[in-house]
Length: 298
Image (tube, rainbow, N blue to C red; front, side):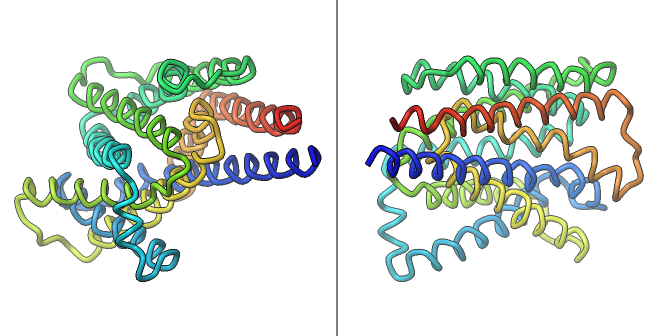
């Protein structure tokens, strides 16, 4: 009996880890896709990205619920509304940060996500953060520091504040997802994309953009943001809140790799070293969590 319970817990945690790590991989394409945009401005990208995001999640929800999709949206409750609002604000602030400050600044500020989420999870959810998770968070922060050392620009305050706002929103979103993990919150995330799109529609100066920029915005919304946050929303049901942003830090490691491969910007030695340290932190957390699941079940 206990062996069956142990296997089930271990399997669900492993599935959650795989989802969150895959989410980080999807999200890592954001900087590259924005780099490929030729003329569209911030609000135009945000608008068309949101349309693609909502369409992607609606396809998933229709596949899962069919005619019952309306009930799935009604089931999210007030916690789901919090998820929607924090996602919409965080996604807009993240895109704004990328346009207002350096990628190094954004990556460095977003790296505070695991620490902030761990503190909130302890205070608001009562989830005990394990020693190995604190160690992995400290290691990851060290890796980020190595990656961006010398590239930070303290003068771009507006972009820095936007990045801090984004990481705060995403931390609260993860806490809300964990609190309501018995309920499917993909409809809430979808609603958040619709809210972001509505805000962008009110702010955009014009809706006409080139076919190329429309394609880049669609890829951002469907592949990068859509698949990324679909996997995070699902994976958070099985992974403690403090571990979610930590396991997704592959985004910071892979982002410069894609630019290297596609734009031929060769990363520095310290970028590669810092990335290796972050990957070590993610691996330590994932392996440590998998080894501990049977003991928890028993």
